[in-house]
Image (cartoon, rainbow, N blue to C red; front, side, top):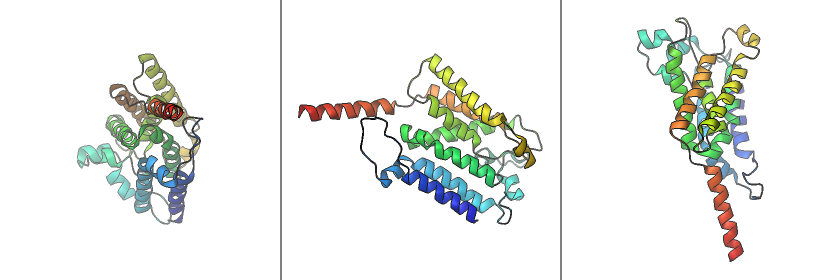
Length: 246
């Protein structure tokens, strides 16, 4: 399990020690490692949970998912309708087929930590869960009877959607443009050169990806987030004015 341990260590290291540019170019302050940890605690928790689940569910020799565990925790018509494994709607979003599948999704979660830094941990995790569960429910109606669906991609697609459009209350035009752009990006990653994926014995569940992005978009439209960027800018401007007055 050394590769998985390295993935976890690299994931933590980048999140804790990478120092992104401040929102305002006028802000020259530097943040401590502890502050970076607080700003990305949702990403750290989510990524760590996924890697730890992989450590427990992968075969040590092949670094691939144990088929028996995949049948229990992966999303399938048989599991839901015959065995009443309703928890699969949630658990399927945290299990992965192999190291390549895991590495790709962990990398995407790492990049989308920028969304958590902007919007906050609670909303970040909420968008992921809503996207993941909603996509699983809808995907269940369309997947083949012999198919097992696994992976965090639907929730990641939802986070990507949030990154592009979650800036407070939007006009219909802004929201529609953001959704279409997100679906284009998600579709591009879902359909571009699937040859290598097919050789590994599985296929990209593009339906779940698109459903995840749409579910996040619907949630963001109905429950707009606070415009944290603007509030931070206003707060800093107010502090600067106070200093000048004093």
